[in-house]
Length: 178
Ligand SMILES: *[C@@H]1O[C@H](CO)[C@@H](O)[C@H](O)[C@H]1NC(C)=O
Ligand SMILES: *[C@@H]1O[C@H](CO)[C@@H](O)[C@H](O)[C@H]1NC(C)=O
Image (spheres, rainbow, N blue to C red):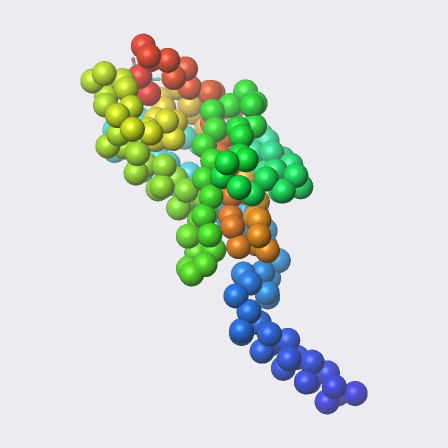
């Protein structure tokens, strides 16, 4: 009886050692992928760099983002080409990345990724030279709070991050983010 228990543990450990699955030993919790404090801090560094006031974390908005993430997960929305915005009353940024070979997606990583669009934003003309809408949302001074959610696809190997912003920025040709 006790020797059976032991060999079971050994087999389970070996399985985990050789498994590439991120969920082998732990249950995936969205909050661990979102990392609210760190995500907020990265937003605020990027905003401070252009003199924009910091955001605060908004639990209502985060619950909205997580609810949308859960719906996406349930509907199996996993391909980039299938992803649509939630269509809610907030500004919204979405990103995805693979877990392997090393953790390549999380709330903070998504936020840094959006900020790589910074050179594409021309403040003088208030226009994007290439995609820059995720960056302008991160720095938009009309937004004062943020909340994010996440879900995983493909055996937990692909992480989706959804951040929503309140209030939604105006984002028209005459209104600069800062
Ligand atoms: C969070 O967002 C809601 C709108 O959904 C807003 O009413 C509330 O004031 C916001 N809270 C903070 C702390 O920004
Ligand atoms: C946001 O930026 C615009 C454009 O520079 C400026 O006119 C406005 O006063 C700023 N608003 C806040 C709340 O900082």
